[in-house]
Image (cartoon, rainbow, N blue to C red):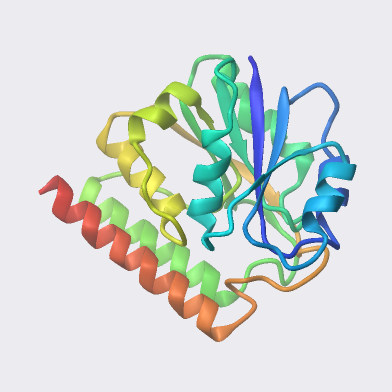
Length: 229
């Protein structure tokens, strides 16, 4: 299977090269870093580590992902999304890809709740937000997720069928809701979650970031509920 790795990044010069160089050899056909308007040397360090860099100055996690997807070669069959800060463990990549390779799933979600989290890797607010979002998804669509984490793999044809639109914090939950609504085969696997290796989280690292992410997730749930009613 020809797999591309997409790493959205904003001001991650202290971690991006280490993240790229920690990837197992031979897994990815292409590694794309989507630089989301960094003011530091994220682009230069990503390129020096061997990644292809796509620049998306319009801020937002989803915007960065969409820009990277637009740059994918036609030959790519599956996509993995990973954070730039070192919190996702590359040793878990085989767990994410195996269900796709065995044709047992089309979307594989790395669940931090089913796996192991280093002390301090997940804040109480993140855990509470996950539980609330999981409750809403089960209530509205009858599917039980345990996490909204960014570490995930998806078959390209399935991803294209979802017609992703969100440009910021609603990206992950939009993908999960649309996957359920369209009958995509979904699997969750436990993954390790580590404390970020450098820098500060744009979401959990500030009160405003956490509130903005939470509000957007709830808005995305409401919008998708209206769309399916």
